[in-house]
Length: 612
Image (cartoon, rainbow, N blue to C red; front, top):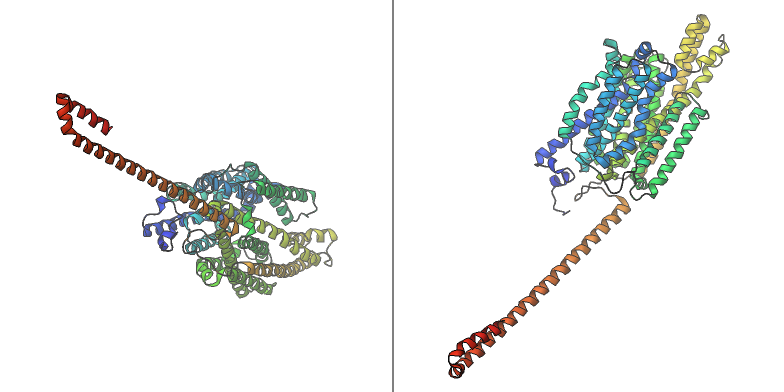
């Protein structure tokens, strides 16, 4: 593009024609699209956590077994994480809006099925279908955002709002679920999705622009299935480890091993294909690979910690689920603030400082929470949660923005799917890792309590909730001793887990030092720098264009030469004709004398012959 291109035209260069219009209306359209995308994301984020507080009511009504209850809770994130790459790349192929709208429809239908499920099996199927719908919605929202906001400054602000909405959804889920369960029945936590989906479908079809990526070559169906199956197996094994199963357990190790093999085969297949499902060359760019790693580390260090903190608030401090949700609200508000001001901070500080500072702030907040003990300290909790929320959102927002900026608009769906998959994997691994650290630090404190039988100590070592049940069953002095010892052991384990989490966060801060120093915003192109491979392709395209222009110029030159030759030939013929007429005119007096009445006829024949 020319260096004189205006900012307004640059910002609409990647937007479909029907969305350009005037500068004012184009800007308004982009932000309306962002509003629709944020509502979509809010539904998915809320649904991921809204069921947690409804589990007791579901258990009492449907009477599921232990395995069935585990699947009711885990099948949604398990299916969603497995299918993100499949639907993210499918959106690049067939249209992101189309996949998003199909996700809306499936999400609404599955919500209705879950609300009125009459047995655990139907509820498991409905939750699985919700996971499919969520996998269709999540990468589509981010890839459409990448398409609608080609200007990086505006896109950074949009991603900040998008990530703040995700934080709100995760926090609002338990509060909304608690309110609905207390005032209605457990199925209402699913019915709340239906009115929003009824509105979102026609509004999304009317407002959202359609966009696709590179359609060269066939869509790799086998590769998509391999990625989905591999991720399903890995996430399933990781979740089993998070629930307490050891890695050497056959039911845990076999899926992890099978998933790892499938993912390795998937990577090899993508490298050999001319038109791969996922552009693995993205990982050769430091900004992309480091951003993905930072997302994994941030979630790995914090999601497991969040669950442990919720147990601390309820079991150690004795807060109700609603009070626990209210205590976590400062974290949500801080995350919202970080998302809203993040774009301006990113322009000032750059990705490297932004992500590193976010990790450092989060680590500082985690270490400050080691002041939590057996007694309630509201000021410490509120201050720690505020810094924690601000630092975490700063890290995730900047990492997502840097990752998405490295992908072209044509591969936005695949890049968004990679980011969301890394989020889910980081969360699952974090629960497994930090849960294991917590259990290892907790068990010794309840293994040898005076007056408590060995069998009771073994049962109490499973969790703090189990220890409370055992202590109630024992009663008397032994029960009180076990309860006191288990609370102290849990707090000790919490402190160890916080220290490990802080170490992982500091590791992320070191990794962030390899990110770009500044936020580069190209002045004459909507696409970011794409590395040497993309640069080589662009140079080849320019060379091809120059060759085609040269051929066009050569053709025009040959045409001009041909026209000049024809003009000269016509001039020569005209001169010959005039010469013949002149000679004929000079001979006419003598011909009339010699030829008599036949002379005019001969002259006419001579004229015709000369003209021919």
